[in-house]
Image (cartoon, rainbow over all chains, first blue to last red):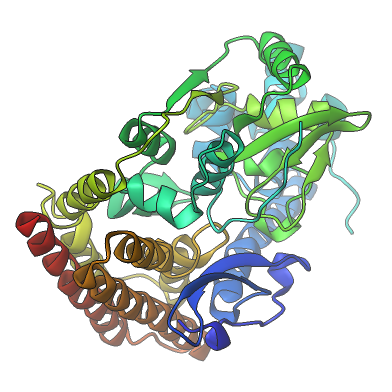
Length: 134
Length: 329
């Protein structure tokens, strides 16, 4: 890639930041150069973010209908899945799946709740409720 | 401590380049990357990230620091902690004494990361060069400017559980050698890298791995949306922040060029140009993926698989010439 081919697409995924790439200048010499974004990369990032967002939206509906506990929403909202949440908390997956049931989650003891709270960087109270839809 | 922040393409090679430079051993990021024989390719379907298979374009985390220091004869001290409070104390003591410290952290809990880039990745490297009123002074190599991070947030990022858990890992340079035999180090590093890319006993590692992934794309099933996420995942691993473009291929081409100049060696210069070609083709592949995914109705898998095989072909040329170069030397 030549220096003048380095894309400057101002990708929203960079949030105004610039990242460093290595490209060849007119003499063919490699030099570090900043890039404000590249569309193909931004598309892939946005696809990944959109997946988490749609999962969180569906989860919110399920929680509002009383089918799932708020934990289910927070998991997706924190860009996690069942496997990752299990790894981050050290809880078995079947236990977490059980905690997706509203009644069981509501009666959870503080110790287990704190493990979720630490992994998701939220207070136990935040975990037990749905945040306002914004 | 006088410390000048310098932006880098990749966190780990950037951190080690800054650490060594601070200790009087000025070394560019590409040189650090190359001397660590860090370029690789691996497709590991049994490890899942967000439901997608692990695809790596470089050696696993920590390998860059370990390899480059071993090759140069630099001693590094690594420390992990079971107790977060102790981990924070040790860091504070070191910072107070004016030591530049490297840390392993999780991206997700670092507040200065752009919202759309905050994923659960536990092996992000950064430097701490001081502590102010508002928290730690952080030099994150992939950002343009140094930042301040509140102690609470940094400690959180250091002590996350899960895959590649950092366990508060911190590291610092203890001694650097007075002289370095660059020709010898470069030859050893390239030779090792040739082995990883062409001689791995598994079909999913090195150039064979690239072809294996191309075969997977050929046979990709599922809905258009699922295919799109799978292909997008490849592009992200290849291009997102921290890769220097084209899955580290441009960083490595830059290393080969620097090595060619140091050693006054034409073969390495040609290898650098060929690696640039390969890198350009990887970018072309990413572009094709984006184009196919945008079309929406169906994805031309054969076209993408062929493009990926094109990357493998171009890389094979580079590694064959480097293999011959190593044998001749």
